[in-house]
Length: 301
Image (cartoon, rainbow, N blue to C red):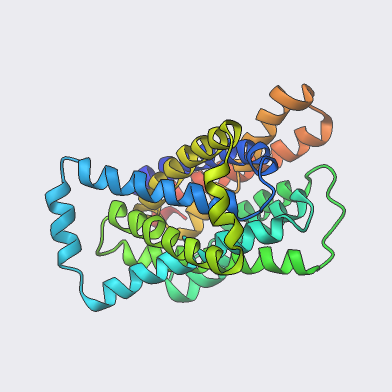
């Protein structure tokens, strides 16, 4: 089961790498930093709800929904708030104020905060090899070309807060998935989360809500494309978390940077330099190490 979780995490990392590449172009098509996530999160919520209803197990899903106790209902609301709404609003707000490279570095520190939370709250253990793998993966991301260091500006702190919320969500989701299906939790995250995001956006930036009707064909193209990748990301990520340790899944996701860099080299720069080779090598070694260690039986570690 854990091996299946690792394969799902690898698929999630692949999807994430493609999504990051696409979002670089999508974000540039919108003047408001929160309009894109508000619209695409809403679409993903509808996609997940439609999938939940249309699946062959809709009766099972409906029974699961009706049998939610108060604790489970509150947990789902918590996932929607700290995973599917506020961090998106914060991240894209901060993202608009700082270099994209800085935002990427801060977001990729997610694995460090997940590890710090998972050890005491989920009782997960980190071996020396796992710790080395995480450091290699994070070090690879620090080698992104053009990164001149953090300035600890307001925008960076906002992105950091969003990252902490997503780290907390990872721990909460890991607990919730013990009793609820990944489909239901993902639908609650994006469905209820998008409603909260719409409400927050309507209060803080009403023009973004009214502006939805004025989107052009190019903007709708990016909305639909990024919605599809986000839908695939959430679907595979939650299934990975259900059967694999949170630290392992989060570590594997860091390798998404390698996918993004390969796509950038093919379609944008048409070049691959030595710095990218170094970065790719660190990420590849870290990825191989974390997946190998995670697949080993506990008595052989």
